[in-house]
Image 1 (cartoon, rainbow, N blue to C red):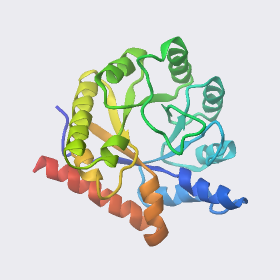
Image 2: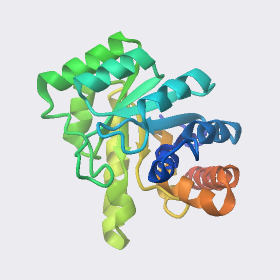
Image 3: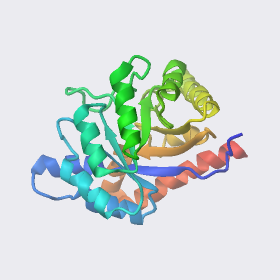
Image 4: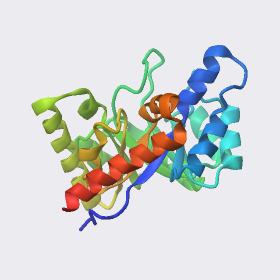
Length: 250
């Protein structure tokens, strides 16, 4: 049985510090400096998405992150030959495989593991052979959970975007999907993470799902940090996560 009192890990995504840097050019603000500040503020890990178009994080960023961080580095990447090669060279603690479309503003949904076929299986195998822990970023769908277990990924990250974007009965239904997917995944021996769109205002019910052991959060944290600083933003998020977790155990 999952322990509802087990503390949640917080992975801080620093992509949008790089977005701000790239809007003006030059090196400021430095996403690696932000990652180190997040580490000092108590982040359990750092997430960075190296996209095909390099719209925010760049190759040199992930190399510097790997060289300077003491906490685990989680690279988000598409399941391509190029990204498999880069990740194998950088050697992050983990790679989260995500879908990617050139014209999307942000990740729009989960990876279709069920229909990924041989190329996706080969990507998972190559990353695992390189000593990298592989996570599949998926919608809370039973077929995708089962496919992730079958393909050999030890971790899933449940896409919480639809939960965050809805209200009322629709949000309750999405939360139930997340709960069911997390329970299914844990029953299959998978470690369960979650993320996308989470903020201090909506994280509580997701934090309460006992099978989830890690949340990866970026946009809301970086947005809040504009007003209160990164240290305070991370502290506020941790408090909201803890309140949700403790409420589930009450």
